[in-house]
Image (tube, rainbow, N blue to C red; front, side, top):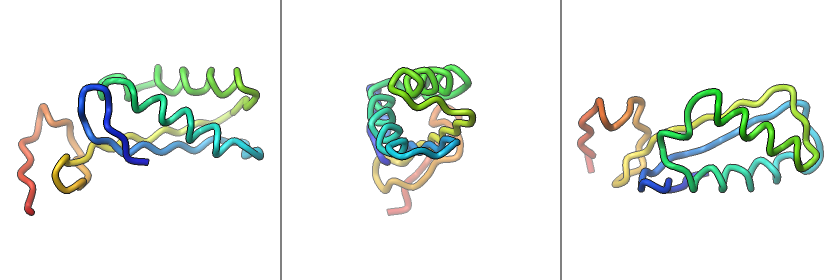
Length: 94
């Protein structure tokens, strides 16, 4: 899902968890919306995965494996940026 973070960056968030259970996909979707309210810098590393895993456990979805993907997007054309905007000057081709 595409979201704008608290600091105004357009990101694409996705998550996958195992074992699959009924209702898990909806729970992940609602938790990803909550993640979008954070700053971009907070969406990386083990801490975010641990927070999401804890929240899933609290609502009845203990997971063994959890993968979270965060992709920074160009605010003009939504193209994926592979590096952080601090290290890349990106010129939208459109």
